[in-house]
Image 1 (cartoon, helix red, strand yellow):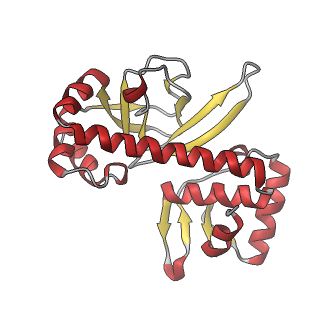
Image 2: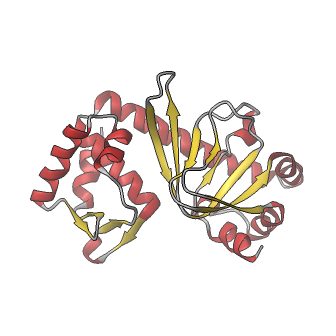
Length: 229
């Protein structure tokens, strides 16, 4: 309970929520662990609550009828997943799978609704989180429609840095999660070979580097400019 309470107080996903309400949410949460490769929920499953990521990482994806996967996001400690089901009553809109062993805090939908009916500020906060997710989804859609490949790769790296970034000296940012070029290509909606050329060009120019197998953004301003429509 202590770990869940500290998470909900300090999570950037719940930043701005009054501390007493975060503590109240922590009392509703149930801690759970899942192993790497475990499906947390699938597209179309009932939306029975939301999860906070305490440790580990999850991937959010969509699968086509042919089995092709479109990676939408990689989530880590501090992220929430499944919160949309709290507001619209519809089934899950994507599939979520553990990439690494993960510790989660689960909040049941009915318990959340009872608590939020008594404290409407919680609903308002969840709406702001959903609104942020929708804006991010719109940015990705716009990037895939209008940005050239380097811009899409830049956007992907910046999104990953937002979740897994560890600041280094001189404004550099280490993406403290080991990603393959195929993972980046999937998120950018491009062929791995083409993404590989972009990444190699940036490594040669000093825009990015690799440190112990992790990508490091050496020139954040360059990527910010490249990712802007």
